[in-house]
Length: 267
Image 1 (cartoon, helix red, strand yellow):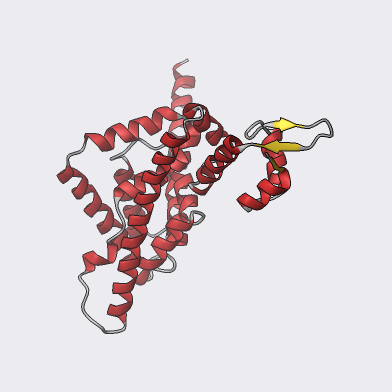
Image 2 (cartoon, rainbow, N blue to C red):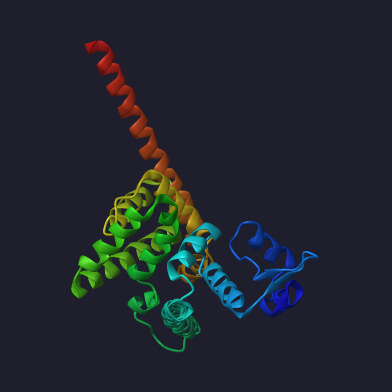
């Protein structure tokens, strides 16, 4: 059995965090002594490992609680799933690292680099994974729809979606470099294409669209990826998306007011 202090040191977390996990029922001590001291066995350590792995992958505590309920202590299956996810992330990071190295070499005049290589390491599969983080808070139906849609595409179709996404972000970068503002007609037309691109996976609400814009400036992977293309891209995307959604919301409000007015006159 391990004490709270020992577990905190093993996991490199605070004692207060362990107390909080106990308070919310996420990690119950194996035994509580008469003096109130908490004790944890190896199974509790394995559960804590799962909690910390899910936290590293970006899940909130309520999502982690639900995921742990599904594993029911089957740590081997859970760890194998984590390994698959981590391996995919590692491959992605390796691709991005090679892309960064090649771009640096090109900018230093080492060799020419095909523009397509600028986007190696970016894919709509990755985009879909990030969008799922936003959509988790809106319920499983939307997530399941996205997964079904993606799985319904052939390899060729997925490649076309991938290339379309690359072309879209390249066009946005060119707009930034040309000095276009986030609310310019040209950029807003690109946001319309961005909106349509997301529909390959699911039909997003305005709330989700705005949430994606916020994700671009808060998620470390998005910040790192976009910075490779242009240092202002993440912030520019958020501003452009906000303006785009504002216009859609205004149009929707105008439509609803018009319908109310028509109903009133008919009455």
